[in-house]
Image 1 (cartoon, rainbow, N blue to C red):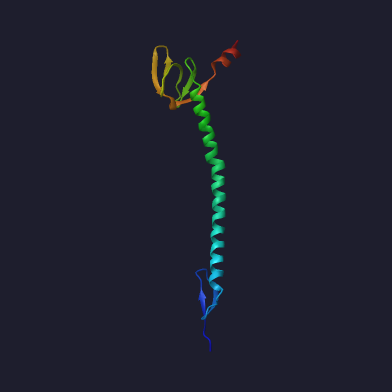
Image 2: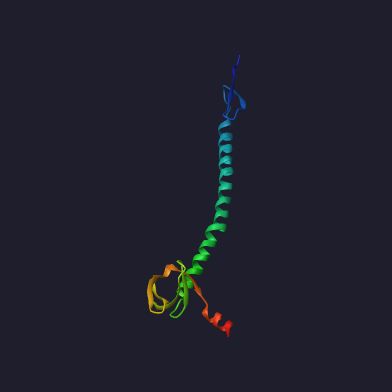
Length: 128
């Protein structure tokens, strides 16, 4: 008599197993394992694409705009620092600005500390 055993998987399902094994079970197992791997990689790839388009790409665009804004700051421009100070650029250096916060009060700040550049020409034109 041929003896039959039952294998129980961790999921709780049971599958009968015969002691003899077939010639095609190795190839079928490899194909099933490869299909499982592709099934896991597809959602991961979708997650990476979503992450790129919603987080990385907008941040790069914002950084590029900020760098262009800093490169366009010249003497006499009104700026706001990341600390909230309003000032007028009096001197442009390689890595910093000399900013006049009030009459006679000048400070040196890094270019990366500039938050925004305000348009004083539009405000003056609107007031006239």
